[in-house]
Length: 159
Image 1 (cartoon, rainbow, N blue to C red):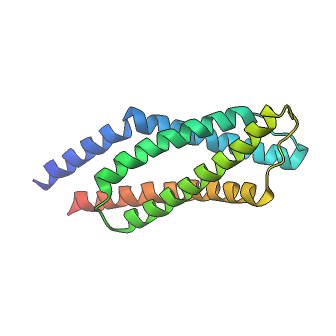
Image 2 (tube, helix red, strand yellow; image 1 turned 90 degrees about the vertical axis):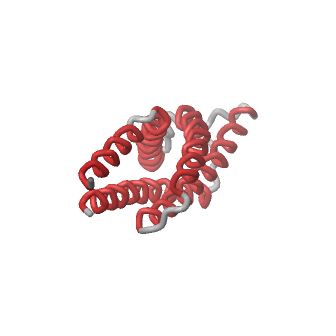
C-alpha cells in the first residue's frame, strides 16, 4: 500500500512539474534572473544596460504569471505546515518584493521613454538595491523551497 501511495505521489508531482503554467513561470524566472545579472554586471562595468526593455517587458509578464500561479498554489497548499511551508512563505515574500520593486523601476524606465529621454534611466539607488538583493533572495529561497518539498516527499514516500 505504501508503494502505491508513493507511486501516486510521484505521478502527481511529475504532472505538476510539467504543467504549462509552472513551465512558463520557470522559463520567465530564469530569463529574468539571467537578464538581471547581465544588466547588473554591465551597468557596473560599462554603465550600459543591455536588454533593459526586454527585461522590463518580461518582468511585467512574470509578475502577472506569478500572481496566477501563486494564487492557485496557495489554494492547494495553504493549509500545510512544515519547513517547506516556511521557506515557501519567504520565497513568496521576496518574489512579491522583487516584483513590486521591479514594477516601480519599470515605471521609472517607462517615464523616461515617454519624456523622450532615451539615455539610461536615473533609478533611485535604494529602490534598485532592494530589487537586486530581493531578486537574489528569490532565487535562494525558491531553490531551498523546492529542496524542502522534495525532502518532504521523499520522507513521506518511505513512511
